[in-house]
Amino acid sequence: LPVDALAFRGPIPELAHLRPAENFQAYVERKLFIHNAGHAVAAYLGHLKGYGFIWKAIADPVVRAEVDAALDESRRALAAKHGLDAAELSAHAENIVERFQNRALGDQVSRVAKDPIRKLGPEDRLVGAANLCLAEGVEPVHLAFAAAAAIQYDQAGDPSAQELQRLRAQNGIEYIITHICQAEPGSTLAGLITEAACRLQREGWIV
Image (cartoon, rainbow, N blue to C red):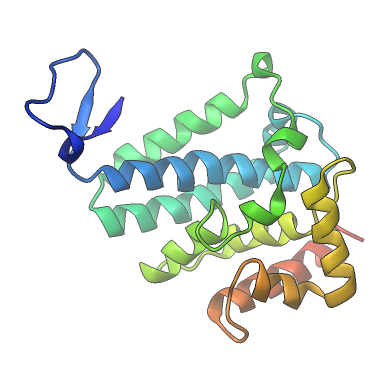
């Protein structure tokens, strides 16, 4: 269990499996941009493929390839920013993807993808990871692809998804990119998400 070593008053207790870390922010971002991001990629692309469960989505080789590629982008950016061991990060990402394959968890795509407006925020799992990549010189092509898929998320019964689709229908995808993802018009990230939206159509993910 990673904990913030600088947050303790007095000596850090010697507890089994406690891992004090002075750079605790690295572990917070690893959770968000590896575990949560990978989950989101599988969920939003899985939804477009018609899967109801994460284990089914990750079993699709096309979805799996996108998850792996997006996590590689996050991994490289995290390693660059925080000086984390690249091999250790890769092993961590592989372990996370193995968990996604666990049928016994019964992890529903609708649960993982829920509230897409929040999850498309500039500091959250997809756009936040993409922004980190850009700051560290990594081009987030696959994270942008997952963000474009999230913009299409239209699950019935999810108020956030329905509001997202209302905004997209009324104002276009550029509005979502600018006002929800908060990517400046003409920016690299805006361009990547726009191109990813075209790719979704080109490859038949959406009609």
